[in-house]
Length: 273
Image (cartoon, rainbow, N blue to C red; front, top):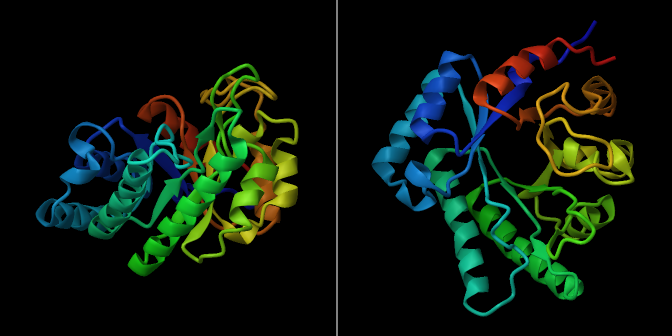
């Protein structure tokens, strides 16, 4: 019976460890795929010079680890205010430059957020920015993965763009660069009416390079629960994705590093047919 290979299941280190320590931890625990944010502490995106980056690349090679980066969703990719808008461009380009230095294989990016009264303007600003940075990434041979973000409560002032299949598709169908592919966060899809099935029916599986995992409750609020604490059906997800020909990696994104490590062993034993 085919099962998910543990080699395809990564762990989102996020901001939990300095990058050097994250690589060492992954090597000690036989984790071959990690992603990390470069926004705080020792991992500031501006802190990686040639010497430090060379050592990190050597460590990844030594431990046979594939590295991805994950931009901060609090940075509004749909920003249009003067000066701030230029800073968002610079932020994303800095991530791309860091990916080149570090040998990172992908960068997860977002479509931004809106304040309800300015949705068309925000969507166009986000699209234009993603188009610019995808062009920059293509010239640098860096892969960007556009993530579907989470639903916010109906009465919230701020709402993420690309949290429904319609909004996500509006962006990715207009972004034809080979440097812009997709990261599917399955638990985010579980929060909206169309659900995982609706996303799987619509999204182009050939553009999906990463599937992110956490538990939550159907049509509920944004939570990244440990598997078993919500009602997400991981077995059904794996079967549906594999049946559609998905061959990319999965990324655990919940709880502590130990929680994600334990769930990795659980997922690796799940059948795919």
